[in-house]
Length: 96
Image: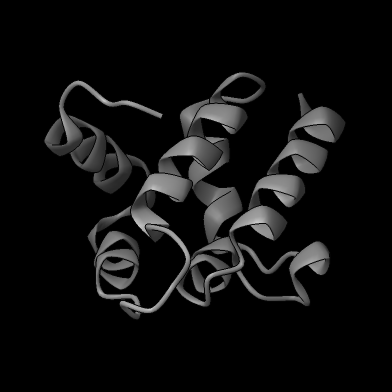
């Protein structure tokens, strides 16, 4: 997905997820098949279509059964991009 201003997107992530979570995403391994920050933004956009930002932010920090009881932030750092997006879609549909 093309973004007009990646810095604004990262700032939005920081406002919703917190600095520590975004720093973990930024500092993820270089050998991943994608960028955890970009996938976190895509995931946030999915959630924002269904729930308020505060609920979306809490979702990123709660262990999720669909992610083997890891938080979405940890799963993204681990490179589990499709799994996080699928978990977000399922959660949003159930909670929206």
